[in-house]
Image 1 (cartoon, rainbow, N blue to C red):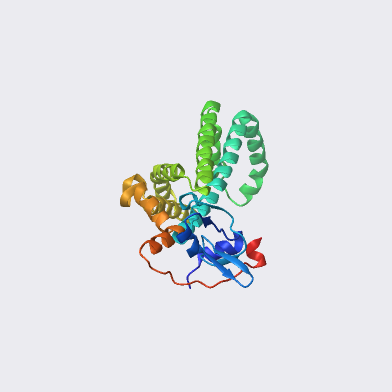
Image 2 (image 1 turned 90 degrees about the vertical axis):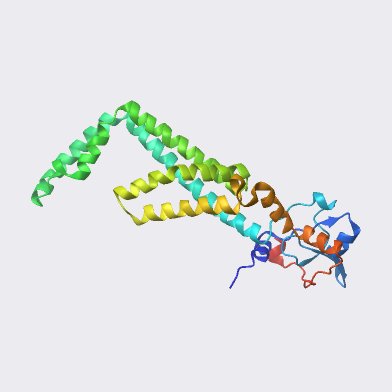
Length: 271
């Protein structure tokens, strides 16, 4: 069963109606009923009881995403939330590394003291703490210079800012954010593949798959870098799906559109 993205969005956010100045086009979007005048919603196409939300020339009407464009916007916002959350987590990691760099000796001493306290228990179970791979990895981390850790913290913070900027740009469907997402995500794909060669985990596989799909979806779906006709073709397709454009084109060739049911707004849709 397919999802009707237009009516789903209107049910949550409400309808958007517009009265164009062009009389022929206005007549195709307006009707009179026994309970008052109705206007066709620019998103879902249903007739809505009441005054239009705006009026003016047709070329100044709001460009309301509908159909595939609305579905694409939903996917972009899903990616936006994922990018913002990831960016915030990386900010926390950057703060932790910076904090550790300023108290490295104290943390090392605390670690060694706790390790000594657990040594009798480890000896009882014949576990060699001094040569444990986990303990060795932690001790190597203690050996990093303070300046190195601060560089790592700065790099993590920079990466986090890129992710957060991407997220907000994608949420508002900005073209520059789509380019930034494709370039930044593709640049880190080789590193993610390398990490998989070191150690395989479901989380790493899922992250890599999500990033590859995101790059391909935005690259091809948004026609970036001139693909599939580039920006002009993308804008033409988006405007071609506009209800005003469809009605105007139908009127120009004398074709009457299929009538849609007159359905007043419900309490949910007007909220």
